[in-house]
Image (cartoon, rainbow, N blue to C red; front, side, top):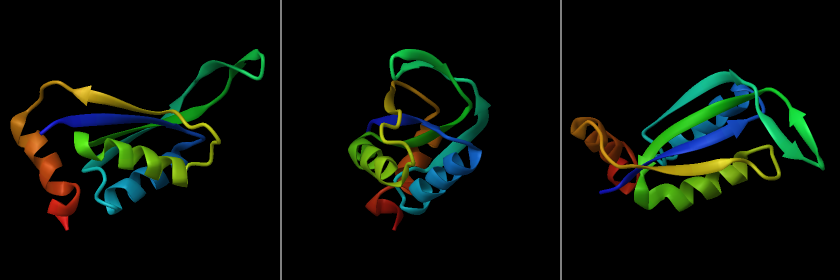
Length: 108
């Protein structure tokens, strides 16, 4: 079974925690980590912007990635949120098994 990390930026730590909790509660992610503060520098509306955001990283199964992306888009405050799936090529087998057991229909 394949696995992915889902990288999401949010307006602040509270929003990132809300998104993370909703993914875990829906059994779309086994766990989520919130990094409460980072500084994004990006091109938007014709100029370089700098702001403050939080980062969420969720661990999930590869077959749930599309559903996770749609879920995040539905609960996120941004019109165009950064939601990126990064495939996990290898990892601690018992941890990957734990992701499997805590996500999707198998966890219900």
